[in-house]
Amino acid sequence: MSGTKLKYIILFTVFFAVTDAAVWHIGSSFPYVMRKGPLAYAQSPVLFPDTLSVASVWSPVYREFGIQEGMVYIGARGFDLSLKTQYHSLMSNHQLSFGFPILTETTLEAGLQLHYTLSALHGIETQHKGSCSGGLKITPHPDWGISLYSMHFLSFPRDSTEHLLEANSGCAFAYSLLPELKLSLVFQKRVLLPWQMFLGVQYKPWKVLACAIQFEIGEHQWEIELNICPGRWVVQAVVRHHPFLGFSQQYVIAYVY
Image (cartoon, rainbow, N blue to C red; front, side):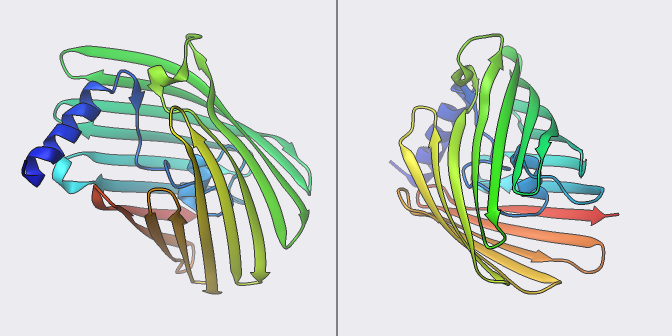
């Protein structure tokens, strides 16, 4: 079987499984719970920007499949709002999320996200779903912290979250080896999949430049992130590699008021 035929088999398997789970590329798989930036704020229920921020995200996902994803985001210290869209000629998914903090102590922070998701196989079926995500961040010392999160742990109507949303939970540990160097370890469990372990390094040598590398132990996926921050602008590029699907990218432009 040729590589092209195999890719299309995988693609159509994903399409006709969409009624079981809409899998997002933006803000999924690789956890951002112990990092900062637009992707982290949009994904984590407990992270919010210090001041008003707006961002636009685009990802061609895996180019051979013809899937495009995009996201717009606005957030501040007390809320965030994001809209994600995933599109292909055969299907589309859209998710609106609203997040807010419920605890803002110095060493203890917690937040919730409410989601509304619409998923459609064009001309065949459309599904609607509501869900709730939550997170907790404990920082007993400026040099280290722990974060717990559970995405889509509640869903409405009250059936299993596998029927449209990919539920996952995890625990993250972060330690600042140096002021500009942070190490992280994340354990994550996605529905119907085994536990995953991620190792990460974040390096910020200057105020205008930061980079991060994350590696997933089980499937040997890896991700490299580059952040450039000229003035109030943030330009972010992420390159991810999957051993079977190949390379994918995400591009972010954000403005901090």
